[in-house]
Length: 136
Image (spheres, rainbow, N blue to C red):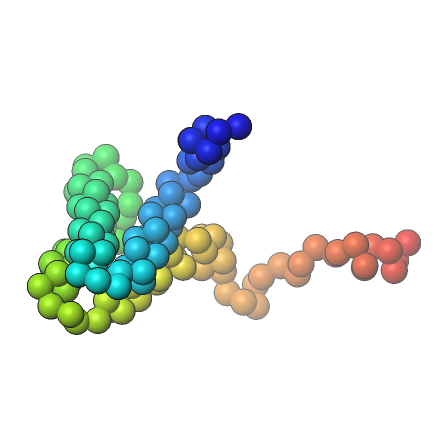
């Protein structure tokens, strides 16, 4: 299977959350690898573009996220865009932008039940092969 077909198949099987997390990982990799003015500008442009796409989706009336969450994400996205533009014209740290992306990656890759279930109410893990072998 060609790399392009494999990538298309992998993208088709992703959930929207997985796709968004992958996009943030890609942008952070570009930001981390930016070692000169040109690569820094390109990485910051990519970050700005990602947030433009996300903000467009968040502003869409068909977006099913709760209104308060949408408002907070829009506020965060506008900050991220301002930060990207500001860092294009100076040599300030990219770490605050990358930290926000890491937080979003963590939130996107955490299962909703994991994020909301209290630790005491969590069900015990299923018995593993060692336990099954010991009981049998």
